[in-house]
Image 1 (cartoon, chains in turn yellow, purple):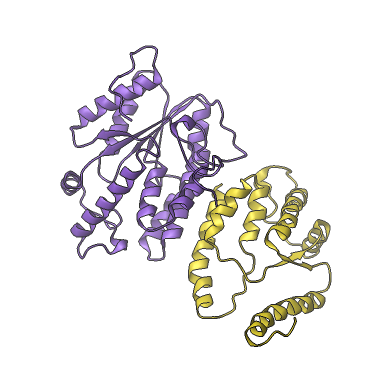
Image 2: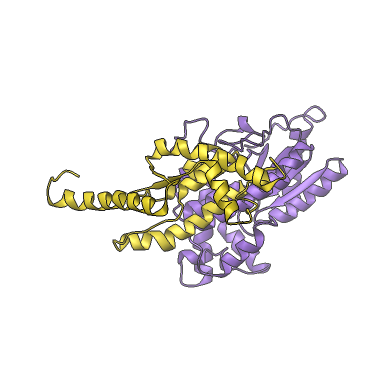
Length: 162
Length: 253
């Protein structure tokens, strides 16, 4: 619970200082992770799903949300390849499922990914296949963003289909 | 969002004493825990702390194990809250969430384990302080109740009620008025006296409005310390040992 509430506090602070002002000024805000991270992670830690959603009901709903999806094996391989030391909480070590960080990470993040899959439906996240190369992913992301930005502009001028 | 009629969402009745108000903490089932949770509520300077100290001594002499918990006293959050209060970066939302985090920490680490072990938990302030402070700062009241849906409904809530005039006298006689207790962030008055008065009036009204919703047992706190303590002991005794003593007919709600 404290993990969930601390992150919500941090999020509220960033929302009010870093996100809302530029939005009011008409700028585009790119958020690296958003409330969906909390929904997936907190639910995996056993916090009530509905409660977390209500907790974050002060958040601004993004115009576009991208979900970079990878299978858990790819995720683990990438982190191992870079010899990254897995962080305690990222590996869900606080849950005591395994004393082996890699094993714990696999179990914890595997469940987090299952939660994300539910969120895709619920919140209409755009799924980006993150198994592919960075270039491929970036191309796809640009089409999505361009479509989205163009859609709003087009609607104001004429009925040209997207 | 949940509506007040949603049994899973909002906070409600005394029938829930010892259970979660709302959605609770799924990984911590608390049904059937033998301990009792008693909250002493009331605004700043009303005399909660001395009453709790006296209640504790009395309960311990009677053989109860007693645990005390108090607002913003969690080891996890207290330093953070102090730092945040001393800077000007807090807004009403982060204020609410910091307090909620502190409360969650104490709930998980102090209150629930103590209830499980059969202690009487005396809580110096409870979530009602947070609901009142945030409510008058314009935070959505329904949202607040949903967020605090992980709180446990106390078995007894004593609300130490006082009028603002008495309160001002007491606070000035003791430690004086401070920035936050005077609600100076709300810019209610030009000087600290005006602000304290206006802020505490609003707070008292907000507490008053929660009295029915949360089954406060309202205690007149304008009286001398001993008299208040007598009343608290009578009610606590009637609750903890209903078979040994006749139930007080004058028991207030």
